[in-house]
Length: 155
Length: 195
Image (cartoon, rainbow over the protein chains, first blue to last red):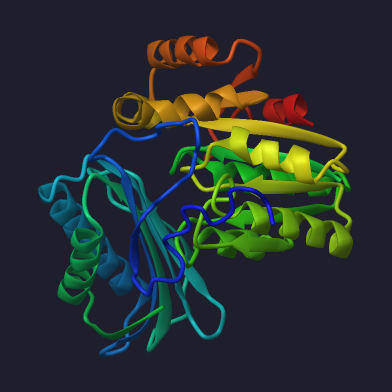
């Protein structure tokens, strides 16, 4: 056992998708009160209806991210650490995106074979000065509003 | 086995730089293994590394500089035993303090022959990050052997010069380089400085 292990390990086993990013930097006060980071990480199985093209999925996720950022900023978010994700097909194709700004569209890489009838999405959001609940609510609400697909969120 | 830690705030370009350095290092015949750490319970960046054909171990759900220290040590020992790489390249989360990480490595992995910390600076978001997370950014700079001011293509010369002044005040001894990981500018010089 390494000294210090698990002293603040509060974001692994609590069954929530969003967590305050507790650190134990003993001599480093990293964040001003009220501006601590919140981490949201989740996986979902997604079935577009009807099957979609990569371009349609990119457009939908672009809209999702922009709406998510708008909602988080309205809730008081002062910094987008990152919002990133990967869409992966059963065949192993991968389409990934990332954004680190409240004012820019996501950057994309990779591709998915078409048509896309089902994929797995991994989402990772780290933002500052909002609550776990605000982030989780914003992700689920914006995803439902902008991605036309049956979505089963998993842990 | 030697260790390279690529630190820097979220979105500073760690994974992009890692992939480019790894590509050129493997071309010279070096054997690499990668450790990807994500503070969330699931990760995205490990997929990029796997796509590049590199052996990668992922550590999720915490930070290897503090809450996952044991996981880091166990992972390094496993990589050493399984792959015996020339270099293990560690990408901590963007919230990590690399000084704490390296204390763990030096204490529990004394067999590591050489270790280097590269800290990336996001030139495009410098002012905003200074306002919100300045203590963390400073800690990341203080622990560096080499500091790369990244995304220089997004800002003008005066901004880069101002950043370098602050960086130099935080760390008087580190080598400072200017790079654009996306265009590849400066990465060859950076690698020469690191290895």
